[in-house]
Each structure stands twice: as structure tokens, then as C-alpha cells.
Length: 430
Ligand SMILES: [Zn+2]
Image 1 (tube, helix red, strand yellow):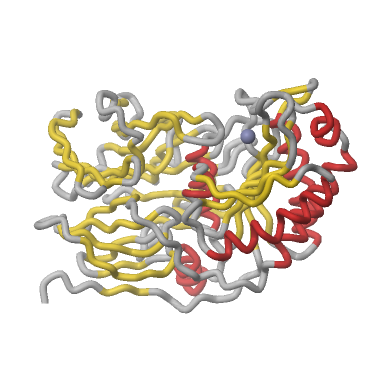
Image 2 (cartoon, rainbow, N blue to C red; image 1 turned 120 degrees about the vertical axis):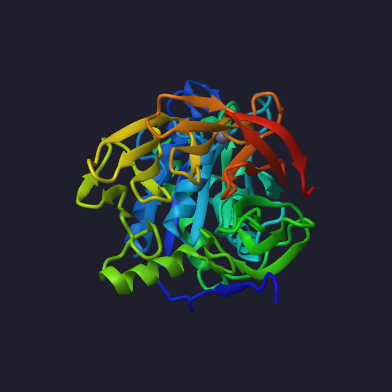
């Protein structure tokens, strides 16, 4: 009975419907420009209008950004996934050659059927509202719709560099109409099933088992739980459910689904929390963008904290924020050290440091991403993958501290590393 795997999935409870709204670009990235308009400003305005409409309909709504700030693509998806929301919509404007015009709505190429029905419901409403050319419903591999774990769409409202389209984007009447159309389209797909399976043939987000004999992996969209055995790299299907925040709780047990974890925590604390670190003893709790570590309450001005991960010795907690990247807080003193931009922190098994990814993007796709190792005091930050030319993300260190697993371009890689260097690298899936 070697490698017997159990999975613990609590029954899904019906929460209030919830959505994360992503205003594309922002801060140092204006997005497309034309006729005196910047895409980031239009995206934010329509997102805020949509946010208000969703809340008026009784939805729990979250904005990735509520001001003009720079947020990485990886930060956007990591944040949305940490919220456990039911829907994700990203708002963009198009640009091409100053003469192309019209409206397009995208779902991820291998997205869930709810993503497709949400797209198909939003799109014709958006075209009617904007009175633009109907360029059709489309599929794409845009990062934010590929790496979110809930039904997701991306709207290209109109072409900002084309005169007639641009004049509508610059008109608050049309921006309100666009928000109303997206709202109506999303609300009307409310009753669609959430749990259908995406088809996918690539892997991501490896996590070492406590005994180092297996990797927990999943597909884009956090679709399904798979386990790869390290002795022969064979892959076993544990669950086909759409899951996220899957965690090993012993070498043969996995707990998965942040919603289920939240429910678990509810019974312990009586509080609603979005994420927590440490199954038995939640020393870190994130709620509404604020982190509580032991008795210390940590918040960042104009920023949102999420995804707190306790060190194996429970003396430190690493956390992400949308604007300021990764920090490590000392549980006893409550003092935080900023590590720098990055996402997906994971601990070294001896609690002396963290690994994480740091990505560059163009607002639609990740263009470059490397795995970094940082000492717990933030003094020593090393790029482990700079010579590999891979878009390397979501690292995990083996329990013996000798190997690091990560995903890049849909494959799982395992690298031997020592003395803060990667020495050998092996691609174990494709
Ligand atoms: Zn854009």
C-alpha cells in the first residue's frame, strides 16, 4: 500500500456570490494609448463602476486595484486565487493600427465551461452597450485568465487608438453602459455549475511531500490534484475537482481548496478568514488585506496583504502584497522585513530563507520570470534561474533542502541546488 493517497475535501458551502475585478495595467504601465486617453485609466473607471454594481446586487466584490498603481500579472492572479472568489473579470482596451475597431471578449483557451458561458453572456451585451463592431467571442492564453482558479473572462471594451471607439471610451455614459452590460452578463450566468473540469495538458505549481517522495502538482486554473512519484516521475490523478491552496498535511494526506480551509478555520476561530498559514495552529491570519501574526496586526498603507505562509519552525511568516511584494515577519517581535517584488513564497525546510518567483510582464503575458532565494533577513537575495531562459514560477524546496521544483511554460522542472546555485536541471513533464 505504498503511496496511498487520501484527499480531504469538505463539502462545498454556498457563500454569497463573489467576484474579483481586475483593472488591467496601472501605475508605470499605461497599457494602450490613443486620442489623449490611457488604457489604465479607462480600465480602472469601468472596473470601479462594475464593482459598485456587483455590490449593489449583493455580491462580495474585490478590486485588484482601486487606484493608479503597478500590479504584476502574477500578483493579480495570486491575489484573486487567495480570495476564493467565484468569478474573475479583467477589463482592458484594445489598440492596433488606429483603424481596427470593435469589442472582443476572451476566455482561456482551455477554460471551464462556466468561463465560456460567462463570456458568451457578457459579450453580446457589451457590444450592444458600446454600440461597437462585434469582433466576436474569442479564446486566448492571457495570463490572468489562464492562472486564475475560478471562471474568468477578459473584456477588450473597444480600440483606444481608433477615433470612434476612443470617443466612447472617453465618455462616462458609455463606460457606465459597459459596466452595466458586464454586470448583467455575469449575474445571468450565476446559476451555471462551477465545478466543471477544464481540459488541460500542462502542469504547474509543484509542492514536495513532507517525506520528499512525491510532488503535488496541478493544471492551469488549479484544475485537479495530481501526484507525481519521484522514483519514476509517474503521475497519478487524485482529484479532478477545481482546487487551490492544496497542501500536504502528512506524506499521504492532502487538504485542498481555500474555501474548505476557510470553513475549517471558521469552526476553530468563529471568524471568516480568507487564508491562513499552519493547519493546526494558525499563527497567521489574513482578513481584508490585513495580517494578524500572533498578537501583531500588520497592514500596509494603500496595499493589500494576502497569502501568508508560516516557516516550518513557525518563527516567521512570509506574505505577499499587491504593491510592495514579499515580506517576512518575525512572529515574536512582529517586525517585518521587505524582501522585494515577487510572488509565491515557499520556505526553505530549515526556515533560514524563502524561495519565490519574480516576474516581468507586459500587462497581458509574463515576459520573464526567475526563481529567487532570499535569506530570512532579506540581506541576501540570489537569482537561481537567471541563466536558464525559462519563465520559472511557483517554486518548492524538497524537505532535505537539496532540490527545488518549479513550473515553467507548462512543464515541471526539478533542479539540484546547493550553495545558492542551481547545478543540474531536469524537465520531468512536458
Ligand atoms: Zn490591456
